[in-house]
Image (cartoon, rainbow, N blue to C red; front, side, top):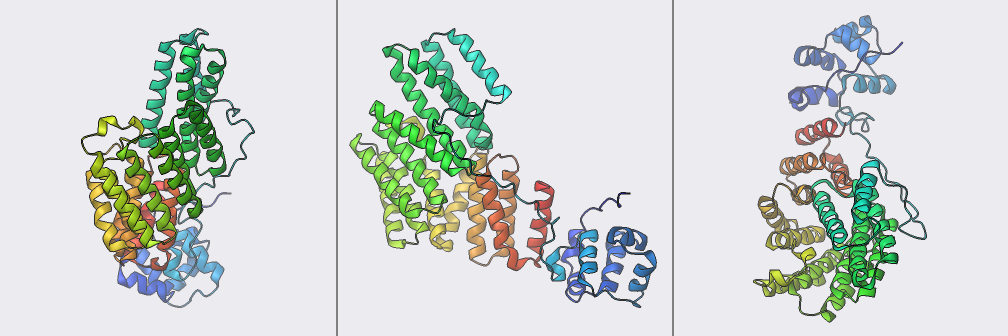
Length: 435
């Protein structure tokens, strides 16, 4: 026989009231039961059903004739009435925050394009392209494939890259096959397209926090672009690998990759916007190492290069034009936040968030997380929880384990303040959004 269905969360006004919090601190269940009846409309019979107790026992507790001392019973009451564990001096209860899905690192196959079959929708798209090509590589085939790549990047920015992996890998496999049968006139364009698809696949696995698989695809992208002699694109791939190394806890490698990317870009010609982005990648890595001097120098080089790029945006490769003034501002703030310079970082990140377009969901979610982080570093708990709520709302529409990981990391940092009203409200919001 199944138990009674759980009731909805207790009203935030009750959870935040001084009377309630004092009763919980003292584990005064006489007052607790009376308050849930008066403020939440949960009557003794319902309390008894929710908490696995008899109505007579609940009545005796409410009358002050009995108390609760056994920890297993107190935990049952916390779970039945949905009282956050911290209020009763307990660990977080299992129901409080949904456990984030663990992303298992996959061992990549020796040949990175030999991936599991694509999802039905992706395969249908591939079949359409194959029909369009009719077994022959034409300019229209290239145009259709390039259009698909551009659409993937838009979807990645709006919704995260994790769910794009099957389709992107399927396209990469198809283009690799076409390269073997095409004539020389089109093979070079196909190789460039394959390099872009390999980088996109690497990025999608990076966003899914499957780092070794991401490195395999980034390496494939490097090999393909090296064959083309495309130094700027190689610098782009190296910059992605630098960012991943920063996330993966290999900040020393991240510095080396960023510097190698800069050397590669310099050898390809004068591209100040590319150099501005690459210097900022280096700044992130130095910040993770807590090397303040090197980080500030890299930020200055990024700013100087950006100033040199003004009026020359059309000369820059299309893949770097996202790095505009707003991105420079917010990334400077993030680098300073990584250093622990919260006071300088906060206004920059806030300004970046204010400027960003609503369609940039993942970027805005990241930046809201960093804004909350800087506010928490400064001891402004209410502001931090408000910004964390924005990050949470934005992440709900994303398939990005990287973003979800940031939100859960921030929640862990709020643990010491679990009894505070803003944190109680944020956790209640997490239960609604993630549950």
